[in-house]
Amino acid sequence: MFYSSHNATLTILNSQDWQMSRKKLIIKILKLLWPQYMNGPQEHTLLIVLRSFIIQKILRINSHVPWPVHPTSKVLAPEKIERGTRTPGLAMGCHIDGRNGIIIGKNVWIGPHVCIISQNHDTADYRRYIEQPSIIIGDNCWIGAGAIILPGVHLGNHTIVGAGAVVTKSFPDENCIVAGNPAKVKKTIGRYKPSNE
Image (cartoon, rainbow, N blue to C red; front, side, top):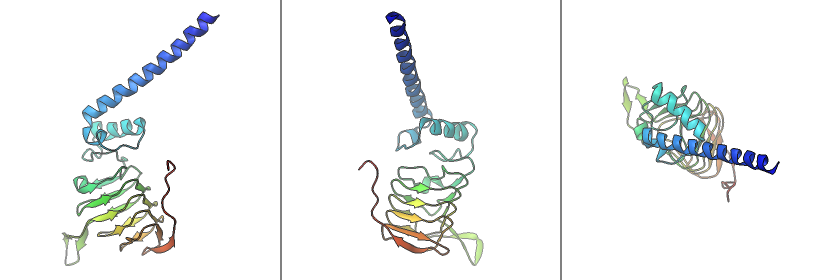
């Protein structure tokens, strides 16, 4: 009896070892094939990264974006986007236009159907675009579903943008909630307190 239960325990340990070895092998392969993302900050599960790799690098949907992006999202000029520690465009239906530059801080959460548009048309000639300052989004911000952030906007640390808000001007002060069309400060909140503090 002891012998068979001991063998069962060894079998379970061996299968757990095999799962860890397989996970390490997948990570090594992804680091070789997708070094731009895998060698930088990562906050996603291996399943999300593997799914994004297949969609972006094999099926060639959003293949120009060097981080995981949902197949229904669109990212323009990713080379002009500093993405912080998360991955803008991972939520469904986002439109992120980085042609004038977007600087995103650490731990910025972007909901579905968010538009971050850094470039605007010239009103005298719609085929031309206006050069404007980069959009800056501070650390620990949360951009709610369907929000729109327009060119030149600066959001301070720990700014929460309400769902459906249209942000046409900067809110550089920290710890606030902005909402509405056009967005206005609705509430001042306490500082961000991550659960690991």
